[in-house]
Image (cartoon, rainbow, N blue to C red):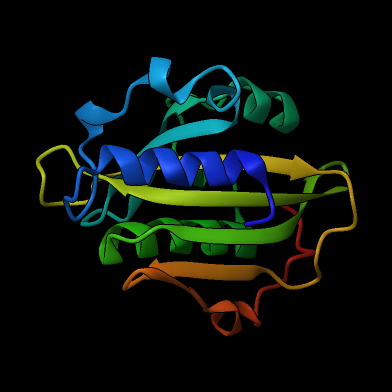
Length: 175
């Protein structure tokens, strides 16, 4: 994944799963996540039936880079256009398939400033069966972001490149 924060998040998520299809939400412990990872973390509610994503907990690094705290706010109130479609689709893929999804893309953050961002979305379950939450680790880069997003899905024990599904994305569209 090219980033220590995301690798630690994946290792933590894998460990708390204890062999289950996906980890339970109650097994996610902020104290175990630790001070180095917690600022880069998001916890979202994902309602597959309603196709809705709501930010439950937002790490301070994300809020600082975004420019405001989006805790308690729906994804549709934060992003719009093709970038909303892209991120929303990644949340849906993560929870429908019950697999971690990694992406690296560019993002026009505020008033034309372009950032690179890497994120890892990992499914969580409240009941042990349905993936109804996502644990997300996200970092921001000041270097030149890629023109097209790179997307990988962890399925059957290995990372699969699914970037071609997102070649249509207008990543320069304002958000």
